[in-house]
Every structure is written in structure tokens, then in C-alpha cells.
Length: 483
Image (cartoon, rainbow, N blue to C red; front, side):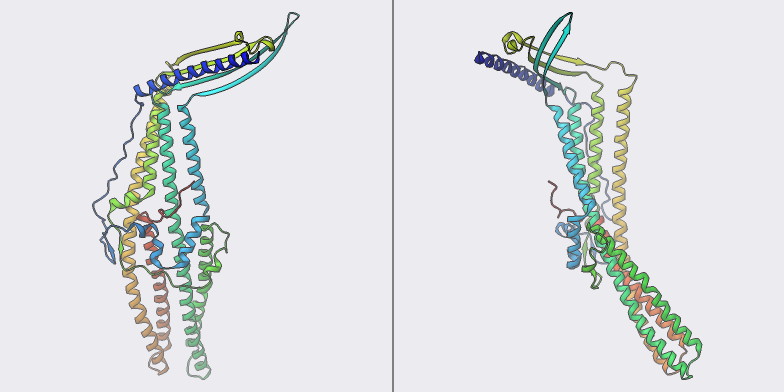
């Protein structure tokens, strides 16, 4: 008896297998005979000028940018603290972790979209006990239901195409986050060292001005100087001392920003930055290539391109709703009024057949959806073009800023040299009684101002090079792929 029941059940499964085979064959025939509706995506060629508008000088050349240098541009500064901070940021930055999570989300969404290619299979079972007209009946039912919507007009294919593009866009977004992250760490590190340099300059000048104040005070007490000179020396000294708290604040704020960039609480990087180090020195030459190379490298442009591809595919998804839908469905199972008869051949039932649905009137709903998605696609194209223009402008601005800041630094170096000589001469002549104290005061103020400006300029030169490497799209190749 059990053997017969098993044979009957396996007979049902074999029959269902035949139904599934027919469904697969019909689906493959439909897919190979119809093209997906909607526009096919063609990457728009970025319109890049043949050469940079900025005249390349101050060590910059149009030679092709070295891929290895761009991948880890921070190594050109030969600063192990900076390299360590960027490594920490790559492992702990929260924006980066969020971008990695978006990749996993996009990958899962791609899997959901791809599931539309396959049939669905459900199993169900039920027992019902019903009383009516003084009669009690039992009803037993179990079966399998299968359904498959055949993607004749490519709605599912376009949905998968959009999901693929979104997944690729999320990868490019991660690369763009890496580019920005490396640059932000570099910029805040340079700012920290610049504030520390300014603080050292202020302390050096404060010491000199304090010595001058002590000298004037001694001369005043000896009757060799008037009170005017004494008060001038005092306000010069106090003015310099008043700048020190703001510089300390600047150092602390830059350190705290670095801590957050590395995924740590404020104060988390204070220990490795406690010792003052020189501002990182830029290399003598920098190969920047041509605009077309930069546009190919930048992940934000590729991200915008993939987003455009996704929106283009979604036009096809919306367009597919204009056409009929073909669905194959089938059911097999067992049903009986008595449990003893449940597995007998007489309890078998099945049905199989195609179904067609077609929205023949929706008051323009579908066409309106197509028009909406076409407008979204157009916006994505405009956003892509804007991204290209912004990238070119960012690179041009970085080029000209880097070149001009180097020229400014050279002039400031000369100015500091001259100011140091002038300050020494002024003090010597004051001691000899050849000039009044105002000359010394002006010389010391000028020296401090030029030294401070030079420290700021040295930091700006390095910061401008960091901005240039960012504009060229450097800093993402060294990251490990997201799993």
C-alpha cells in the first residue's frame, strides 16, 4: 500500500517536472525572439579640451601622470605620520564604511532584480472540517503552485540592467569617498603642521620681543629711554603673545578633525601629533597629464555615468508596461474528503496554462510614468555633464593655485631674509643712538608678519598639491575590494 502511494506521488512530481520543462522552453523562445524595449545606453563621451587652460609651470609638466604615484600620492611627501594617518582612515572612517554598506545593499538589490528571470514555486497544505445540514465533512488538500512571467518585452532585463548599473555606481562612489578621504586627511595634517609652524614662529618672535622689552625697560629705568618707547615695546610683545592662544586652538581643532576622519574620538591622534614636524615638502616636479586622462580616472565622473545608465534602463522598465504580460502557471496536488484516500491516484488534481494580461486603458498612467522616467534620465545626463565641468574646473583651479602659491612662497622667502637683516640693523643702530625705537618696532613687526606669512604659504603650497592630486583622481586604487 505504501509503495503504491509513493509511486503515485512520484508520478505527480514527474508530471510537474514536465510542466516546468515546457515553461522553460516557452520562456527561452520568448526571450530569444524579442528585444528589450526602451533606449539602449551609450556612454556619453566626455568633452575634454586637448590641453589645460592653465600654463604649466613651477615644476608641473604635461607628461602622463604616474599611476603608482597617484594611487598613493601621500608617499611623495616622505612623511610616515601622514601615511599612517591615511592608513588609519582607510580602516576606520565611518563615511567609508557607509559607502561599503551601500555596495552590499546594491549587490542585494541586483539579486532581487535578477530573481525576476526565474519561476516561483509555492507549496501549501490545508485541512478543513465543515458542518452543514446536520452533516460534518473533512477536506484535505496539499499541492505545489508554480508561476513564471515571461520577460517578452524586456522589463525584467532592463530592471537587472539598472541594478547592475547601480551596483557599479556604488563601487565608484566608494572610490570617490576614498579620494576625498585621503585628501581631507592630507589637508588637515598639513593644517596641523602649519599651525605648529606658526606657533613656533610666534614663540621665537615673542622671545626676541621680550628681550627687546627688557632692554627698553632697563634703559627707561636708567633714564636713557622715554616711556613711549617702553609702552611701544610692551604692546608689540603683548600683541604677539595674544596670537598664541588662537594658534593653539587651530592646532587642537585640526587634530580633532583628523581623529574623526580616522574614526576616533577627539584626542585620538594627539599622541602621534604631539611632536612638531616640518610641513611636508613638495616634490620638484609633478606630472599632471592632460584633461582627458583626468576625466577617465575620476570616480565621480564614472559614478555619474553609471547613474545615467541606470536611469536609462529604468525608461525601458516603464516602457515595458505598455505591452502585454505573459505568465505561465501550473498547479499539482492531492485533495480528498478522507485521510485514507489522500494518497490515492483518484485524489490527484492538476492544471496548467498560460495567461495574458494587458492594460488597455489607464488614463495615461503608464505613458506618464515613461515621461517621468525620461525626464529623470535627462536630469542624470545633465548631472553627468555638470560633473565633468566641475572636475575640469577643480583641476584647473588646483593647477593655477599650486603654481602661483609657489611663486608667492619664493617672494616671501626673500622678504623674510630682508626683514631679518633689517631687524638686526635696526637694533644695532638703536643701541648706537642712530635711530629711534619706532624703527626697531617696525622692523620686528615686519619680520614676524613675513615669517608668519611664509609659514602659511609653505602650508598652502603643500595643501594645493594635495588638492591637485585629488583633482586628478588619485588615492582610490590602494583600497581593498568590498566583500
